[in-house]
Amino acid sequence: PASWAVWRASALMFGNERAGATAALLFNLTLAMGIGSILATSDSMVVMTSALLLFALAKLYRTQSAIWWLVVGAVIGLGMNAKYTTAFLGIGVALWTIFAPGMRQWLLRPWPYLGALIAAALFAPLVRWNAEHHWASAVYQSSRMTVHEWSARYLFELIGSQIGLLTPSILVLACIGLYLGARSRDRRDVWALLLLQTAPVMVYFAW
Image (cartoon, rainbow, N blue to C red; front, side, top):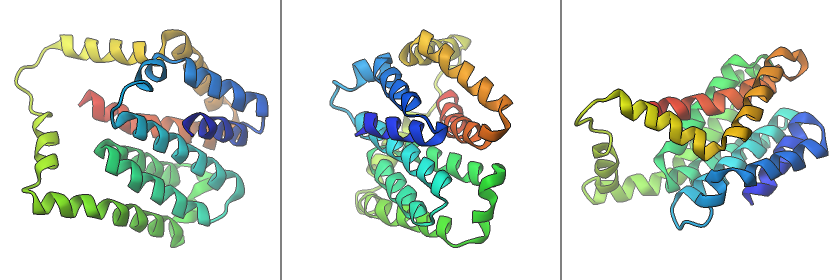
C-alpha cells in the first residue's frame, strides 16, 4: 500500500506517470525500506500511513475537493495509534496550509478542522487507555527523551544514520528535486508540501 500511495501521489503532484513509477522505485530502493519493511515493528504502519497521507494531500491539492480533508484526518489519526510521532506530520500539514498560497483558502472553511476532529477521535481510545493505565505508554515514550549526557557525537551519529537509511545516492536526488522545485513557480506549493512534511519530523528527531 505504501508503494502504491507514493506512486500515485508523485504522479498526481507532477502530472507524470513516469515520475510516479520512478518515485515508487526509489522509495523501495532505500535502505530504510529494504531493512525496515522486514522488521515487525510499528514503523511499518507509520510508513504506510505517511505514504497514504502524502497521497491524500496530493489528491486534495489537485482536486481541491473538501472530502480529502477527512481522509487526511483519518490517516493521521490511524498513524498516531501506531506511533505518536505521526503528530509531527499533522504539524507539517498545518504549516503547508498556512504558508502555501494555493492552500490558504481552506483556513476559512470548516473542512481542515473537521479532519483534525476525526484524527482526534481516532486517537481518543489510546488516550483513554493511557488514562486508565497510569499513562503507561506516554510515560515510557517521554522517559526516552531524558538527556543523561550530551555529546556532539550523538548529533553526528543521528545525521549519519539518517543519511544511511535514506541511502546517500537517493538522498542526493531528493535534494536536487527539492532545489529544482523551489525554483519552479508552478510547482512551488508542491515543493512546500514536501519540505514542510519533512522539517517537523527532522526537528523532532534532532531534539
